[in-house]
Image (cartoon, rainbow, N blue to C red; front, side, top):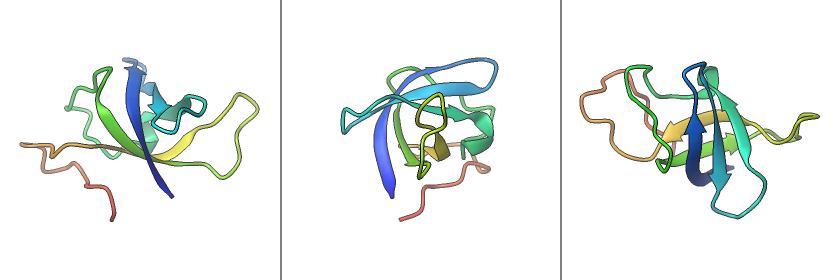
Length: 83
């Protein structure tokens, strides 16, 4: 199931946290799960869509796929979120 939220932060190390719109616990992700080119800068407050793992890890919920919710103009390698 695709969920939505707001990017809380994204580190230069390649991981971030999303605050879910459903007000559940924050969701962790690594860049490997992110369908956004590294050349696109992710900023706190960006709208995101994501697929949350079926079960949380011992440290909490994490995303298996993450998309930026705006057309990435000038980013031919950015994959759009599936409908």
